[in-house]
Amino acid sequence: MRAYVSRGQLSSERAPGGRGSTFDAKEVDALARRGGRREPHSAGAGGELTFRTALTLIDKDRYYYRGVDAVELATAYGFEEVAEWVWTGQLTHGPRFTAPPRFLDAARLAVGALPAHSGAMDRLRAAAVAVSAADPLRFDLDPAAVLGCGRMLIPTLVGALPTVGAEHRGEGRLAWQLWRRLTSLAPDEQSIRLLDTALALLIDHDLAASTLAVRVAASARAHPYAVVSAGLGALEGPLHGAASGLAHRTLAEVLERGGAAPVVADHLRSGRRVPGLGHRLYPGEDPRAQALFALLDAIPEARDALAAARDVIDTTARHTTLHANVDLALAVMSVAFKMPAEAGETVFAVARTAGWIAHALEEYAERPLRMRPSGHYIGPRPPRPLPV
Image (cartoon, rainbow, N blue to C red; front, top):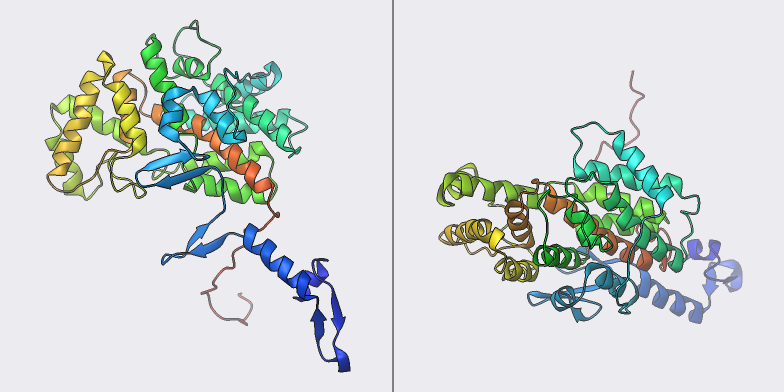
């Protein structure tokens, strides 16, 4: 209680006789309600950390953005429109995200200075830091400023990636811009719709590891660029964003060896999980994978990669019941259109940046530094002699 008094959150009076202090019951009750509303807490048998959020609900093999089925949103509207919905709860028709030239120049300069072997995630992280340094107003955490940052940062990250394809007529839309940075193959409306839908489906997915990192950074009032950098750092782990690259390599090997059986057998023999299968939040098939497979079914170029994915699913089903997840669907897209293995991770990072901005907006509205867990010390008990 004394800590709350020192912060000005409670008032106290000395108890009669000078023994202890008394507190206003109404102030204590108000503080308890405020703390219960704002503080993360542990719940469930596993003691998982939980947060109040109005962004994404995952329930019964479906997930929802602000109460609306995310798959329906992603198949009806483009990435920019769905991002605006997640950010504001309002549908804006035909929004266009643009990269200011001075920020784009800074990002490209930083990316251009990286070693030639650098991957897309290296470039995205470097671009985010460079744009941050170029923005003297980056610490403006007003919601309108944060939203403006999101609308500018996402196309800047994409624009900083090297191009491998020619410019196309739909260059104003983010999916068209990203396409020419993933493959030299010319797109059509079907393939762009596939990529656009994938971006929209991947905007948010509750408190994934990278999103938790974002919430912690935002709680410390890190600016939006630093928040996104925290997300990009966590995303690069092999158990998170890089999973689609492993699935890409698996499908490529299935196509090379003429079937899934020997590839799945190698995974089983070495004790590795087969990439692209299973998701801890979905007992059935990942709804994001279902939506993308439905689009891939109608694209002739995806026929062989899609058949390889189904072969992997069927072969694995002889041993265990694991359904396809979104990483496998992204791998089908990247293999079918001759994209690099890291293409799925790139799509994931660009799309999830919008979700990170949404979570930053939520966290900025909370009490700062509310996520301060206590360590459980297991080292030698002090005092110990000074080491020599």
